[in-house]
Amino acid sequence: MGLFHEPPLSRFTPATLTLCADVAPGGIGSRWFRGLAPGAEIAFKGPLGGFVLEPGDTRRLLLVAEEIGIVPLRALTQELAAANFVRPARLVSWARDAGGLLYDAELRALARRHAGFAYHPTTPAEGEPAAVAERLVTEIAGLVAYVAGGEATIKAVRTALMARGMERKAVKWEKFW
Image (cartoon, rainbow, N blue to C red; front, side, top):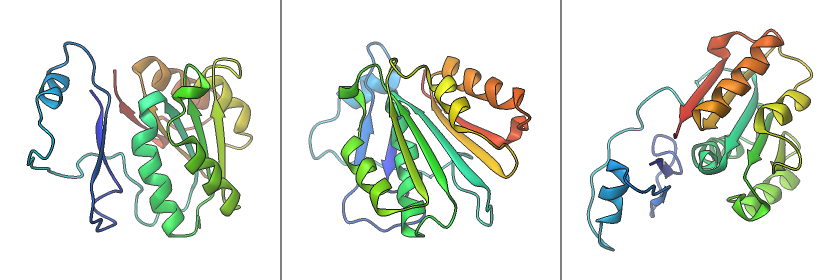
């Protein structure tokens, strides 16, 4: 189960907290989530971990999302938009079909409003996430990548970028399955 809060609690003070959960059969977190009643009170910690924008980092961003992996990357784009995209960012959002491209209309609108943000909604017709990312990256220097999705996608994107000279530590990831 992937569960993320948005917008990032460390950067915004929302009146409403939106949860997105990918509920999978048999998952321990999924069973917990399915057992919640509407209006149930729950406690949160965090944000925890390293899948956040580093303060002071000015590198260009490549964001690669596989399906539900769009949720934490959308939160990052919201943070970048609040700063008017002073760091250029490209977002590859991949889903099995166009209907699975979560937040598509919102991200298209964001790309129209901000010259520093490029949105690339993709499906298998355009290729797997690693192939699409590799086509979009023309220069590795000054680039950091954030990849969210399945383990195979994370490995494929990291391998493709490292083959072009990117350091392993410059590829940050959040695994969902």
